Image (cartoon, rainbow, N blue to C red; front, side, top):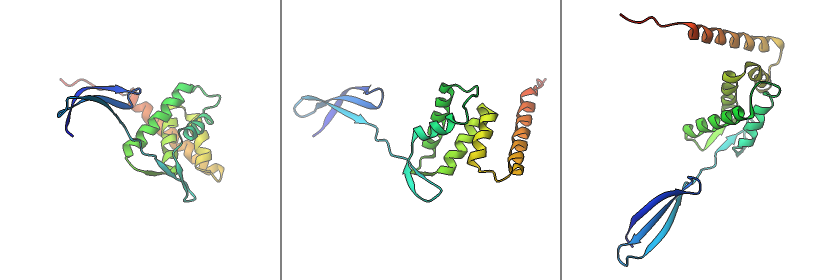
Length: 158
């Protein structure tokens, strides 16, 4: 059966495309719906087991270190969305939990250093005060470099 598309529009809040079609042999019209098939991302845990990716788990892992910090709920939601977008860009079926942890730390590092250190101290499982201090030193050095680059002014070329 051959047909032609008469009209197309999005439906189901942008998750599907509704198409009005017309049969070329009998001229009858009918509707089709095309929806995006979302693949389930699997997370490989440190013990080798796998489980489905959970937005809620990422959300919880961000809320805990941000408790009593000047980070709003909407900012946390944006961080989770950024992590999901990065995972989607990776275009893989399975991702290691360590990679997700690194993405969480990247988001926290740009928003709130105290929340970042809280998360890193648990995630990296610092064994002693020296490891914790080394992380703080590296963070401080990165912040100093970022502040320096923000304060530099480009001179106009003549």
